[in-house]
Image 1 (cartoon, rainbow, N blue to C red):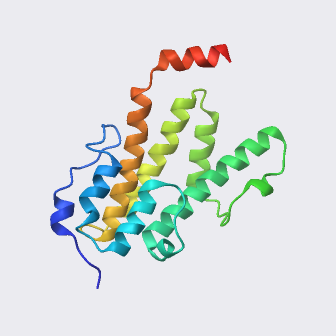
Image 2: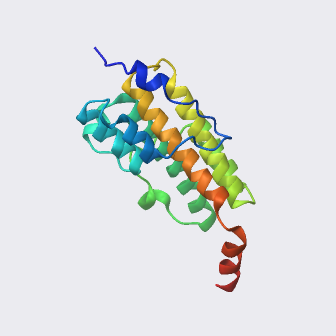
Image 3: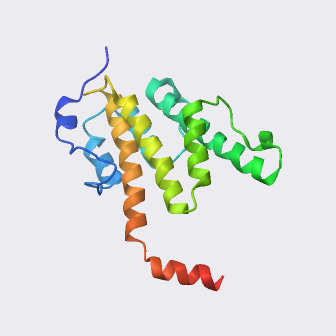
Length: 176
């Protein structure tokens, strides 16, 4: 029987793609540290910290689905870029390579965007939507915490983008 973290999860603020994160992923992990088992905490820390998930974490269905979605999205971007450069994409693909029409459409829309920032927003919105779909049926369980942490990472990334000194970055780009 899965464990439920009713009090912990009910204390977390709602997340919305178009808003600032209420706190950092590190704060979230500290909040969870003593309230969930050590094994689950390590999986959560791994998922919230980097893009590589341990093999042990792959036994969690929602995390495996997320990793497969992320690989499929990146593979579609590889296909789009390789076609433009007229090179073979096979040496750049990661397994499993399972193309899906929806993911292909998102990747092509982002790739064709004239703004790099808009392209990144399209990709992160697709990631957010996937996580929203993945969260259905998970209300107070560990999968909810995983999905919450992954969403928090997306929000933190956009918060950093919004806070960036754009004029300085433009000057650096122009000088190089």
